[in-house]
Length: 385
Image 1 (cartoon, rainbow, N blue to C red):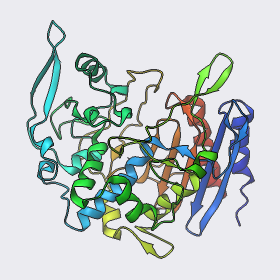
Image 2: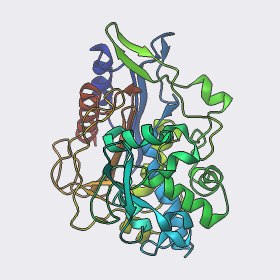
Image 3: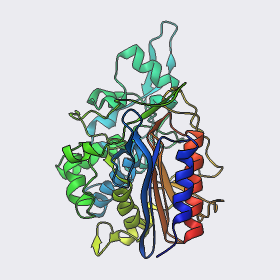
């Protein structure tokens, strides 16, 4: 068994310094799980301890799971990567592009040029934006009364595009539409499809859109910054949603999510259970956005996210961020990664067969100290393996 004290030490130090209220993390190599633990508190109001089995909101780490559901349906011929998605979701056949606002404040819209594809939805090149990083969408929602995506109301999906499909990259609600495509192609609700075809086969019993009674006993609070330090909040994804947020609605544990990461790392199978074909995972792990580049995410909602600047050359797969060059932590070129709004992060390194999951529960996103603790964790994992 690897000596994991160095991994534990960097996480414990982050808590001791007050950089995060609590953190849980897990890591694996080709032989299996090498580390899984929690430090600090999951609720600063009660002092309840953070543990390896603490339940956390993984937010946009949901996207990769929803993407895997969609790719299963691509394998079966029920979805097409490059066909018009309106064949499955007719409402996406007449989307509009927001070009600004007239002097009275009314949105200026025009029909989109070109069809939306599943590939574009999975790579964030379809034209959909999140209000958190797009002031025009914030204004559009205000002018029209359309709710934000975190409301999990169907009306939230009716925002316009901010550019024509396939012409740029911007981070947005596209994978919520992928969830709708999974439902349309499978005839099942997203939560049921995901449970039956991804979560249950992989033994991810603590992962789902609904927080069960047992999970609630282990649930971490999302914390905000205050002058006196971290303050726990009651923020929670709606538990009776109109639609399941395929882009950000899941709750999980670091150990559960590591099972998903290991499945991807190992080419679509875990512990003898195959959920994706090796060739499908290979496609998911490649640049799927061509010459387009990831644009910096400048916040339009400072309480929800800081600015996020990407390392030059970052690409998007189906649906992962891919680093084209090796990283100082030890992560190989061509590895897969992404994150969740409350400062949870993961990476999958197929070349070195290393994967890790890290979760604290803090807003705003891309908290400098939380990110540094994640990088220290990742570096310690590579030094251990």
